[in-house]
Length: 168
Image (tube, rainbow, N blue to C red; front, side, top):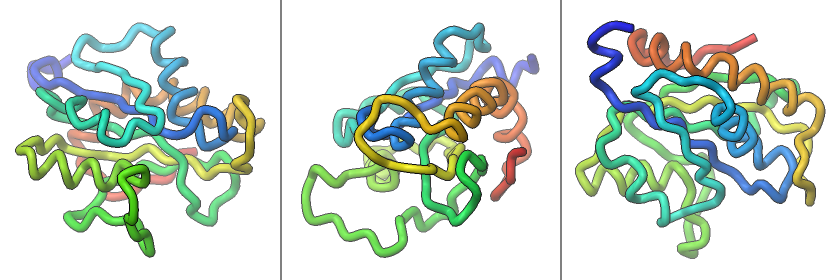
């Protein structure tokens, strides 16, 4: 590992509702990562639907990899690595309650508090979001693939600064 990689702290944050099937994808990936040996600079955390509870999570973090699902019009289980632009916003989303605070709003709040980690999203296309603690078969496979690639992504993708990559 290069000296540059060992001197940074990377947080892999899995988010989503673990009681809503594929919506809990990020949490399932984090559970897999906890069973693996990761580089010393990588920390993993299940964010669930933590909202404001996650505000302190990025203290000291230089790189943040958020693992989540997103409707992208792709086949279920398809993975995308996305580096957001300066305008972090979900299209068409209106916040009318503190219970609706998502990752994009947290990133904006972190910036207001002076935390500016380099951020990337590892996203999967969900198949179904319904009451369940299990992932659909395509998302189960995607969780396995995501966990296998995350240690490499934590080093390589941040160095390359990609905008969007389709991961097959």
